[in-house]
Amino acid sequence: MLTHRRWESLGHADFGWLRAKHHFTVFDGGNPEHEPVGNLVVWNDDEIAVGGGFPFHGHKDMEIITYVRQGVLGHRDSLGSEGQIHAGDVQAMSAGTGIRHAEFNKGDEPLKLYQIWLQPRTAGGEPQWNTRKFPKDDRSGRFVVLASGFSDDDGALPIRADARVLAVTLKAGEQIHHVLAPSRSAYLVVASGKVAVNGEPMNALDGVAITHVTNVEIVAFEDSELVMVDTG
Image (cartoon, rainbow, N blue to C red; front, side, top):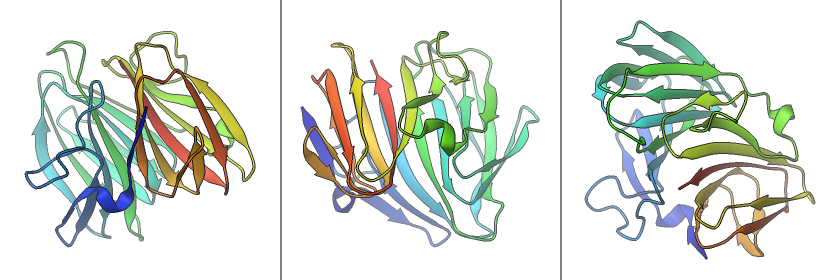
């Protein structure tokens, strides 16, 4: 079954320095139909103004993956880690027993990113932070695993959740076939472009929950970039 979450149906918040759309219910007043998919509980589409950012704040027992779509993200945390994550690259943070961090726009244009939160397999554990470059050319016409809770996904950022975060770029007219195990679900977002998923059209920034489906056929009508979480 495909359950679309069109851009205009998403919950939203506007704090001036931060404009956010929520694929999943975050605050009271959000779309009550946008419930978690498996252990995927948050997918925020954030735009952070130049000079803006989140001050130091804490997380616990959550796997947080950040996919940068535009601009440069700056990161600092209580582990002493610092980094800059550029468009197309990814960071993964296992909050574990507790971590504090700050995230901010390090560039000279609005910073656009996805914040994806997954519940871990088990609570606790030492907090961790990692980042990695994922050139878009490497995922042209094929899904590449960016972050994974499975040891056989070589090259992916490690997370402690029963999930994978994947991405693909498609040229206009290209199509791709993806197989989900019968026990799995997925959530897919069109970062840019226009596609059809199992024959149903999706515009840029739309999302879709994919449940009780094993075969996913995606056809690109325009050059497109897709991000997906495969979850138990």
